[in-house]
View 1: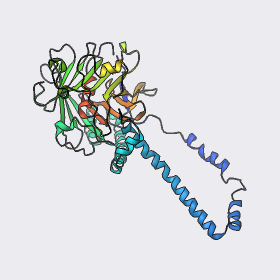
View 2 (view 1 turned 30 degrees about the vertical axis):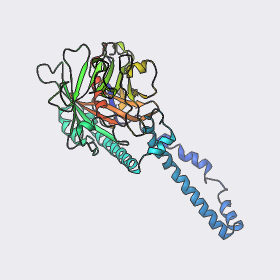
View 3 (view 1 turned 180 degrees about the vertical axis):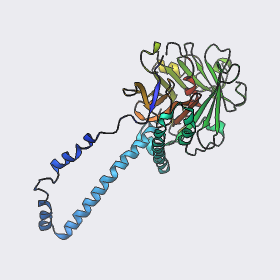
View 4 (view 1 turned 30 degrees about the horizontal axis):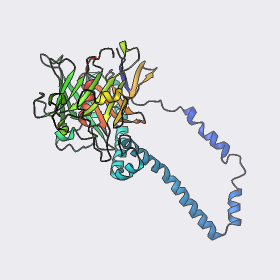
Length: 409
């Protein structure tokens, strides 16, 4: 069985005072401690440099120093634009032209900075209650301390769940599991809401009965989870071993259209999830690979509509033909000697250990958390996703973690 992954609020301990004390001595060796050099500089300037030229020199130096002060923010702004560029594919590619064409509005950069500040504040508040996990008395306090989602315009929920998250924003959601009823123990229902003051329902899902493989239907109507319902938006299907999953939208199955169906009406493959074989958990925590369609320069998802079983996200991943696809992986947790467990930094959004806790990142920018999922109560989880994922992709990837996986744990 896989080891549970615990939540921590920082990857590294705060630097020790001894290390912090190394810097002043190093500066003292090259500074003005016991050095006769500094007095010579003002004497040379006063005697040899005329007043007018000296003034110009000082102004030039001020301009130069000002430009140097502005350079670091410029480079950090470029780093902020980089995550969106990671997901551009095709002719657009992650090139400077594509970035210059679309760019990142200043408003979105400011929103990103504000959001990062909110996350740091939320982590500081959540740290105070970190020892209360699993206790009924601490539930009320946790609810108050939980970071709420910044206002995200949902509009029409059915359309929102298919749209990529706004660039520079994190969509914070809450996933709940309902196991009540005669058969809910084997076939529970799952509900996704925005984790905000006013909880907005987004999606519901349930595992289908009498299916050869794990098959979850997802709907925008919590009271109608049938495939034939008008609110059916997609499904999640696994292979026989339960270690590979594919996420579909509500398009037509190419195998049932008689071969004459319009290509535009065929279902899209929105994601594929691969769990690495891990018999009895000897290889440590779960290892996940997530394949998603790339994005074009208009921030639209590249459609992947296979016409037969010889094509699709999993087939292309196996054949290593990933031209229009993006490959993501779960962020590996680190071993904490103090707690004797594997841990990840969830910024206070996860409070209970579970094998289902994970973070999904791109290999070129492991600090950009595309998706994170973790337990906060027995049947409650937080689900936070960012661009380029949509709510349906994030929800389906999370549902894949609930299903039993032969030879994976």
